[in-house]
Image (cartoon, rainbow, N blue to C red):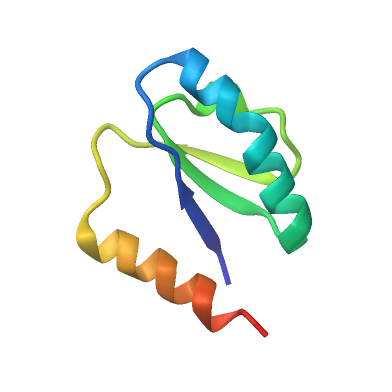
Length: 75
């Protein structure tokens, strides 16, 4: 099961500010996360993340799939 997070922000500064939160989330879940972002290079060296480039906002279906997979795996 893959866990996806969507990181919205335009610039590198936005993504750098998100890094501690994303790191903590991955560590608390003890799972690798797919990070969908416009700036995947910011997260490229993090061992708990699989950064994936997106060119536009995710579709409603993508958001629902990610939320469903997250909720399904909760205890």
